[in-house]
Image (cartoon, rainbow, N blue to C red; front, top):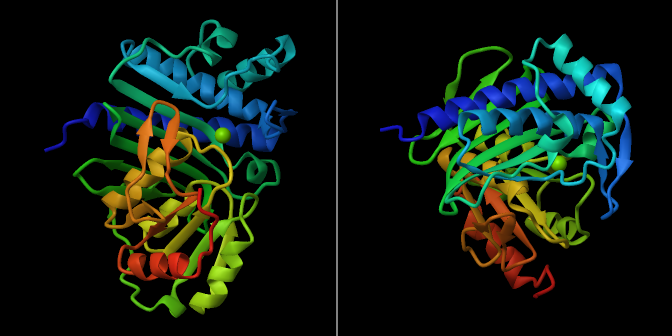
Length: 309
Ligand SMILES: [Mg+2]
C-alpha cells in the first residue's frame, strides 16, 4: 500500500513545474555565476529552487529542507525581476519574498526533503543533459524520489518517480506514467555503460578497457540513474573525488533500486544519507541493472582501480 502518495504526487508536480522554469531560462537566456567552490550556478538554479521550496513550505510546513543553493548574493533586484517574469509567463502562483525563500530550510525534522534545482549545471549551460531532483526521507530512509529530465531523448522530456516498496515509474513526453524495469543484460562486454561528462576520473577508462566494454556514453546529471532504471543503459560507474551531497544521489538511488537495480559503494554496501551528507566509504559508487553488479565490483577491486581512502 502506498504510504507516501501525497508526498510522491507533490514531488512529481514540483518536478514538472520546475522543468518548465529551467526550460524557460534555457530559451530566454540566463545569467551564470561562479560559486565559492568554483562550481557554476545560474539564475535558473535559483528560480527552480525558490519555486520548489516555496511549495514544500506551503504543503508540509513542519518538514525540513536540504537544498543545494545557499548563497543568495547573486540574486539582486534585476535577477529577482527576471525570476518573477519567468513565474508570471508560466502562470505560476506569486511567491512572497523570493530572496528569503532561497535559504529557507524549515526546522530540524525526521521528515526531510532534498532538492537539487539543476543537476548538471554545466550540461544545462551547454544545452546538453541536465536534471532536477527531489527526494523525501523519513529518519534518513529514502521514501520518495523524483527526477525530471527536460531533454531525455527523442521522446522529449521525462519524469521519473519512485516510492519505497512501490516500484518506479516514468512518463515520457506528456504521456501517462508507466512502470519501469532495469534491463536483463547479462553480458558485460555487451553492456551499455554510462559515465560522467564533466566529473569523471581517468580510471573509468581503464575499467572500460579491462571489462571489454565498447558501448559507452558520457553525460551530465542524475539522469544516468534513470537511463539504467528504464533499461536504456545497464551500468553507471561514478568515481567521486569530492565531498558528495545527498541531493545529488538520493532521488536516483531510490528510483533505480525500485526499478530492480542495485546502487552500492565499491564494497557492495548501500549508500547512507545523513542530512546533506552522503555517507560513502569508498570514493565513488556503482549503479547497475543488478545482474552485472558483482562482476563489475570484482573487476574494480581486483585491479585496484580506485585509491583507497
Ligand atoms: Mg545543482
